Length: 237
Image (cartoon, rainbow, N blue to C red):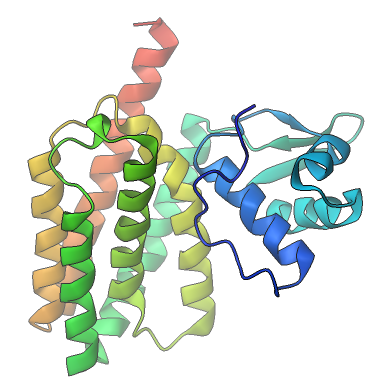
C-alpha cells in the first residue's frame, strides 16, 4: 500500500476534528486508487499509519460508506467499493438525471461574479494540464483532477438547491476513480478540452439548456470510455 493521502484532495486544517481529517485522507486515497477497489480495510493498520487511535478510523469508515466509497459486509469487514460496469453506469446515469438540472438552475441565477468564476475555473483547468493527461506525474494529475472537479462544481454552484449540490458533489468525487481508469483509452484530449469549453461558453452566454446538453454529452463520452476500458481489461489486452 502506498503512502496514504500523499496527494490530498482537500485535507482539513489540523484544528479540524480528527475524524474529519481521517475521513479526508482515506477518501483521497480511494479516489487516487492508492487503496484499490475491493481492498480490505482494517482500522488498526490505518490508525497506526495516521498515528491516531482506531476510533476515528472506524467513524471515517461509516462516513465513507454513506458516500459510497466503502462497503461494510458481514463477516468480511470493510472494503473499498468495487468499480463494476453496472456501478459506473448507475453512477453516471444518475449524474445525467441530476447534473443537467443543477446546471440549468445555475445558469438561470447567473451573476457577473459567477461568470467570472466559470472562466477562471476553466483557465485553471487548462493550466493544470490538457494535452496528454496520461503523461502527467501523479502530483500533476492530482492537480489537474482537482481543477477539473472545481470547474464542474463551478458550473453548478449557483443552483439554489442545497440537496442537489450535495448529491452532485458526492457523485463528482465518486467519478474521479472512473476517470483515472479511462485515461488508458480516452486519449482524445483535444476533444475533451472542446467539450469543457462548450459547457463553459454556454454557461457564460446564459444558455442553460445548451450547457446542460453539452454536459450530458461529456458524461456519455466518459461512459463510453469506461465501457471500452472494461472490455479491454476483461480480455487481458
